[in-house]
Length: 201
Image (cartoon, rainbow, N blue to C red; front, side, top):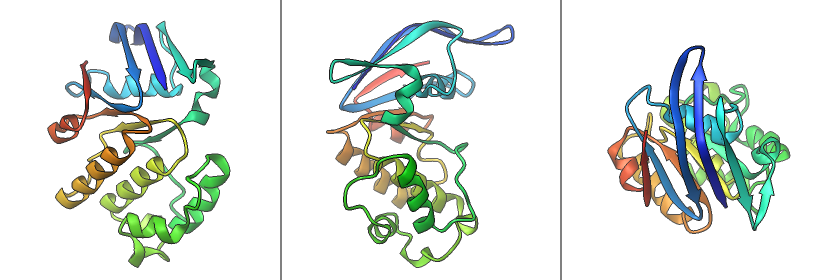
């Protein structure tokens, strides 16, 4: 998977978030996006995901030497971010059933395995709305990893994670970096240390 950003710029009203960004993200591997709050990290991820349109410039997506139209890129990616909502009235098993109809999941993945890997076995009958912030974050991160797509986007992935959960996340990153393009925007130095390539906003 290859993503090429050419002279990418984004403006809200009269304020430029960033201008003339030219870079590329080649996978498999881990790419980090660093920068202070307000530097445009989340905005860049939203542009790459296709959720936002650039004010200027372009983004080109290439998979197996074929261009992917921007309007179809959502079928090739999964994203986990603190601002992404899920249906909190569902249990994890119910969420997986609905999500699996929208995005392809890894073959042979079942709710029992998912709950075990996410350390949520004791909470299998609990609606997600009763999860702690850390539990929700683990669930969303694992859901992205277990989606059968070529690239993943993570915005502040270690938010709400304690030390043990951070180690769990980095182990998953090291497992999947050999088969997926992973783009991670973060202020956390530990997150950025896991990245093989880094751009500063």
